[in-house]
Length: 420
Ligand SMILES: Cc1cc2nc3c(=O)[nH]c(=O)nc-3n(C[C@H](O)[C@H](O)[C@H](O)COP(=O)(O)OP(=O)(O)OC[C@H]3O[C@@H](n4cnc5c(N)ncnc54)[C@H](O)[C@@H]3O)c2cc1C
Image 1 (cartoon, rainbow, N blue to C red):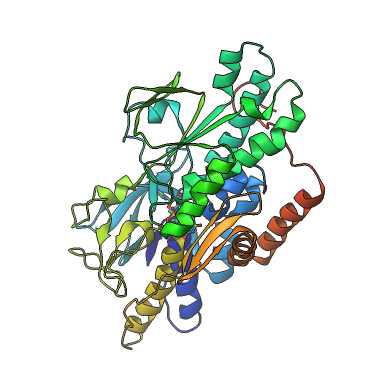
Image 2 (image 1 turned 120 degrees about the horizontal axis):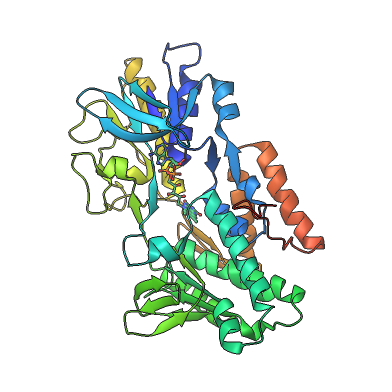
């Protein structure tokens, strides 16, 4: 059994399968991923703004796999040959290349930021999806504060202190709220020559949290506006070293444009000549079987699967990916032991969006919460969802330290000749 992709879906499927097969079925499970860690994306905004340490939102895959007898290879999958049941993968940062044969293949390669939507994004914008993105965003924001403190030219300073997030969905909104707290609430205290009103924050999106219940989206918008965040409804047209150009011709001068406005399915998956939805996800049935490819299954952000409750496609979220990984493992074991497979039937739990400054919005199957109760619930639920006891301790410790001490505002460069 070969699983590709070490995210929510892939890791869960591998571990659950190993647990169910242990001592009962002679199944060899291999997991391949281009990183040897698993990233807990719901806390990426906290990592990007220093509320938790970036290392505390990533978890090494090897100990998790080793404990369950799953073989792991840190390799980047380049191509899949469905006809010959093999794939080509290489070590992420070297030329070591291998052909890997499989009898069954589970695709869980996730999605990537769609940087091709608008010219200049790939070259001039930061993305917000990977662990490295969080480190880069935090360093860049702090670096811009350092630069702004060195100039007295108001135009240059304004540009240096303008932070733009494109995309007002879950990730973009959460990040903008966290950036507001970091810049105006924390960093500003350490730069006596700068004032909070010199910081400009712009969130670009035609609607705030478009997939969220309207009253929660309205609450969120009001919160952002009250904190002085500008909401820009015009479409992003181009990113350049000058900043973000909008479709109506205006320019938002900035050296920090963060792109969260869309993802596209991993190209290894979208390159497969198989039936897909418009967004590139592979069509799968209630047993995760990919249409037109026997023995191949797709999970998480790679799968377009119908939700039997809403009759729409399941959204691309960790909540779904995790349940799908577990369900596929159960179905495969049922099949291998001659039992009847149970079709996947998960009712979405709802949504929670943290808005920093002890505020959030939550919609849990119709139970709608805002403000501190929602924020407290978010902290509790996501802390419990962290994969290990050690990881929970680390994150809770970060949160506790922040209650009593200043947040760390050092810029730790790891690139180039001046690396420290
Ligand atoms: C900032 C942010 C916040 C989010 N917050 C939430 C939230 O609060 N709640 C929620 O439910 N969802 C949230 N999501 C969505 C959630 O992260 C995804 O839906 C979820 O990660 C999908 O799981 P997956 O296993 O399909 O893909 P992923 O978790 O993305 O895993 C894919 C894995 O494949 C690896 N990979 C990619 N390409 C290759 C390759 N060619 N070869 C080998 N390995 C490869 C990647 O490194 C990664 O390990 C958030 C997403 C982001 C970006």
